[in-house]
Image (cartoon, rainbow, N blue to C red; front, side, top):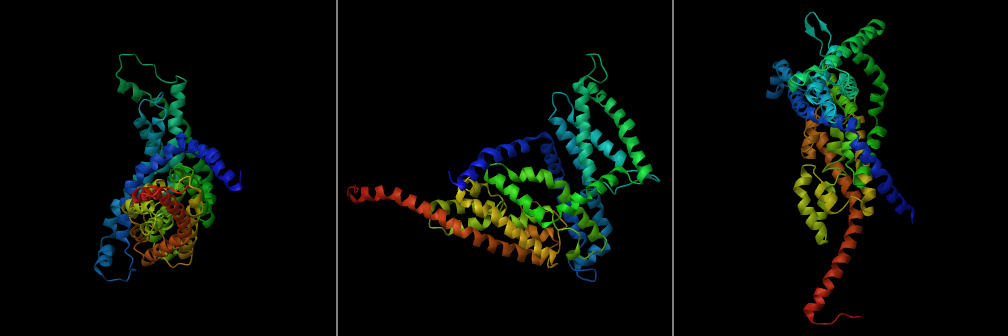
Length: 444
């Protein structure tokens, strides 16, 4: 067996099963679903932020800029209660979704989500002069939310599994019985986590979310690097090629970091920092619209090549995939070509996002493009999504266009190899038909 075949066999028989198990792991799945719950709030909040800070500079006098300056506080009020408190949605969703996986012991996942929310607020939102502190309800509290959202369902599962709780008569209604299941978890939170928070404040001056952010600072900083971006892309693409939904697996892992990066940019923009000098680069739209235009592998370029192919099969796939590809849905081209498990396309499938990622990173790093402050829907056409994410930066559209060219150049020779194989197959299939039509016997 050749080295190439051994490599592909390794991916199929070793990497894919392991990735499948990781993707099915209950905590990763619950984290992923919790972030999905928060997406509508994040998208709407991002859109409001773009309206509040138009891409013209503070001295602009056009209608949009004048309106934004005059009514900025009113525009940002809904932002503060959508994306500004996204951590509340995430901790509730995580507590709920993880509890659902313990359906044999936790009968009411909603109560788990509510207790997760209550616990998070108890340690992250101190009340001063009757005012609730909101600093850690956004991206700054994301890691605390994850820890709390995992701890509460695990605590409830442990207590029920070991029959620790109130023993109520059978005549008690089920809903009342479920509510009583919260008493002991609430007491445990009050006598353990809350005193721990007070102790940390007394010893360090930090509340728990502050302390956790300090611990995670090196990881957050490391996540906003080109090697981290390329590694995430590489893992996702390899898993996709092996038939596993790579984006779901990597997305659940990187979501806290890219959201923390996005929040840092939004806070810097609100404080008056120039858009090209915002502190972070790696946010989700960098993957969705710059590196993966048309879907994983940046396959919209391949769809355009297919439309001009001489092979009937590829032309048919191109026509079928064009409209979905515009909206970053590439299952028709990925599975119809097929690209998945096809050695011909492995190299460009991995390489195209990497090269596009390097080019885009350089555009951000050289301050030629406004950095990302918003998360549009991932189905937005790439030029539109890229412009929206970067506060309507014209250079974002230019960057996407260059990435299209890069993708076409890299995909082209591999597409021609596949096209040649298909044309030979089509010629073999057509030969008997032509012979039958002419009445001439086939040559032995």
